[in-house]
Length: 120
Image (cartoon, rainbow, N blue to C red; front, side):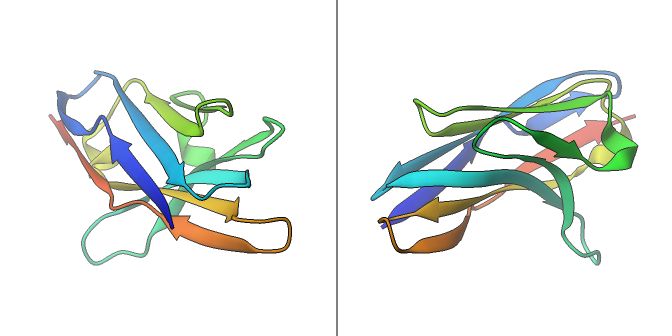
C-alpha cells in the first residue's frame, strides 16, 4: 500500500508565501512524475505543476514565476513553494504521483488534499 500525505496548507494574506509538502510512503519501488493539482468548488481539478524523476518541470502558464515545484528523491517527498499568493490561488491542493510498486507495476496515487486560503 502506498500513501501520499500533504501538509503545509493554511490561511495566508495576499502577497504571502506557503510551502506545501507531500510525503510518499509504503511499498515504493520508484516514483516517476509527481504533480500538484488544485481544485475550487464547481471547477475541474487543474494541473499546477509537474516534475519528472529527473527534475524537469512544467508549470501552468498563469503560475510561472510565482510557484516552484521540487522534489527530494531520497525522502520520496514533493514540494510546492508558493510566493506572491493571490486570493484566486485559494483552492484545495492535491499531490499526485505515478509510483511503481515493483518493476512491472505502476499506479496513480492521490493525496487527500490540503486547503490553501489567501485573504485579500
